[in-house]
Image 1 (cartoon, rainbow, N blue to C red):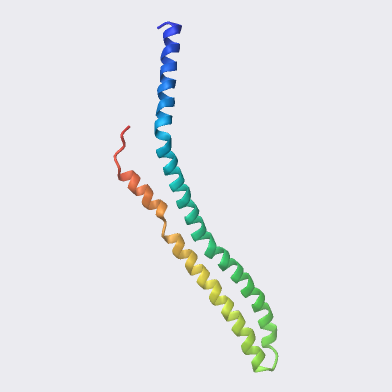
Image 2: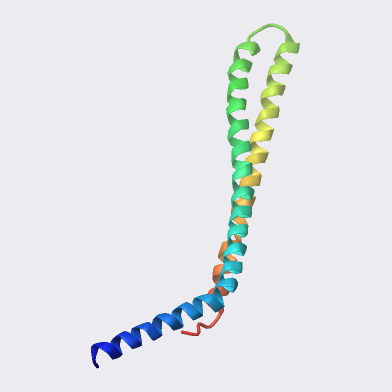
Length: 123
């Protein structure tokens, strides 16, 4: 092969590659857009309950630190209020944790991976 034929073959391959990109890019962009939307939805669904659980856990600890000294006072009304507030924040923190665990268990990306692995490749 001479240098001229090598350049012609290289330019022909580059032209075929650019033609392939031009023809197939809309389909790949739709797939990319769909994957990006799926990732965003998974991220929001998973991180939302984790954030709620973290904030509620911190508030529970702060109310617990107030409830313990108040529980030493003689009034039963103060005792009921302090422990009621602490128990309420504990319930919110546990509910956020349960929601986060459920969101973690429903992993649609694993389903996509298993579906693409089952499909035969055209390589």
